[in-house]
Image 1 (cartoon, protein in one colour):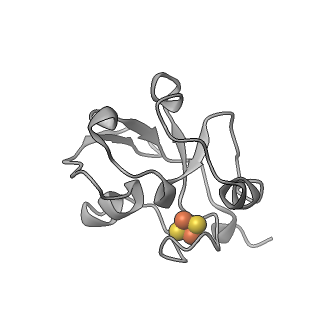
Image 2 (cartoon, rainbow, N blue to C red):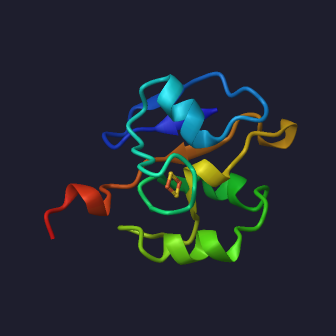
Length: 107
Ligand code: FES
């Protein structure tokens, strides 16, 4: 799969089946925070899914939608990285890191 970093750099990494996008990001030092480690209690694992891939993902659960509403820089194709689990279908997935997360802003 490919991560597009905040400065536009594309990073292609191995995406083992069954791992979440958040777990893969952490394995490769991609800068996604994931403060709650995938328990749907934060929105710091927000990623912007490439439009070509967005419709291939499972529908988000209501809990995910609620958390996404809190994400900074929400877009039409935003998802929580910890909720996207790699399947055969998602081989080649492209996601972009959002410009910033709420936790980085001293609001
Ligand atoms: S890591 Fe907190 S919701 Fe994904």
